[in-house]
Length: 125
Image (cartoon, rainbow, N blue to C red; front, side, top):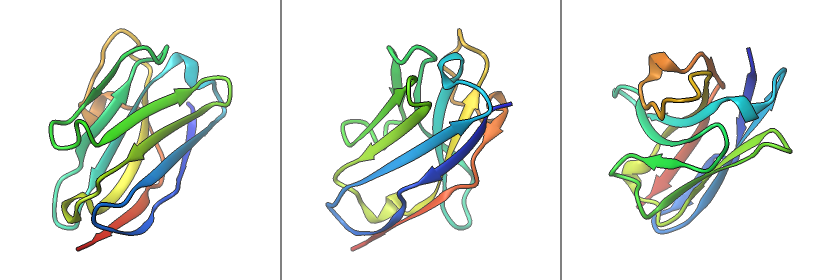
């Protein structure tokens, strides 16, 4: 299993930007689909963005399209989530996750077998 550690969360005003990082160890991220998920207080975990094992395909939740960008640097064993035009409703704990199902651009949490501990993002109005 690959181990994942997120960083980069914090407090930001509405309209601002943050860049989340996901550092992988134990195995190379180059063989995994990587996803970002978030969970707000009292709500279920939801899919935010995903990227294919080779990095050539990305997919997003409708709520973050045009504002968030997922990327992956297989050489550095890192994944990122650039978040722009942040809104208060983006406030949540954000999690990086990895799926070994290379051929499937999945957004379902059970498909992801490795998870980080999360990083908190708070957007003030």
